[in-house]
Amino acid sequence: MVKRALLLACALLSSCAIPAVQAQAQATPEAQLLARLNEIRTQGVSCPGSGRRPVARALSISAPHAQAARLQAGYMTTSGRITHTGQNGSTPRIRAASTGVNATSVTEIVYMGTGLDTEQAMRWWLGSATHCYWMTEGRYTHAGASVVRGPRGTAYVIVLSSQPR
Image (cartoon, rainbow, N blue to C red; front, side):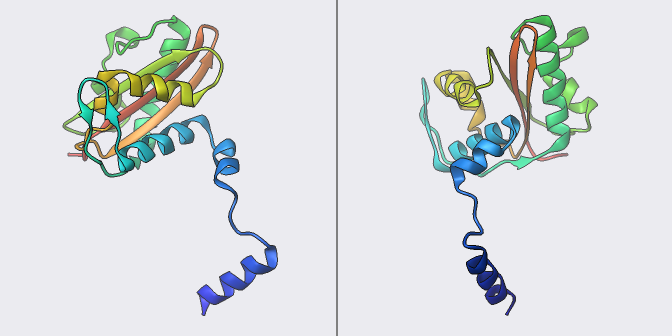
């Protein structure tokens, strides 16, 4: 009964769905990155150096992971450095733990460019043997992203982890 009422309401409104392209254009850069990453993981991809990667399940989006990514993205835009070492020598694992991520495996992928182009960051990561491999690693189940524009460029950071302990 409820399903029938929803279908009728949709018909009266002429459309319930926003076209995918329009929806993606309205999404935040972080949501765009994570949606694209999940698309790659669930469809599979060939990575330089390691070939066809096994299909991996979609990642659960996590606010603490996004906060850890934001810490590094902010540091990169103010320092102008593309690095996994953060303020005061912090590492991806330390930053993730500081935001409440408690997992056995934690990794971070970073990119810095000019302007705002999430697909450019994704293409760069997919063209890198190391980044492509870790993005599609099946043990990772959770992720968060941050895109920060600053005086020295736009930093793109995704933090991935295994199941929480």
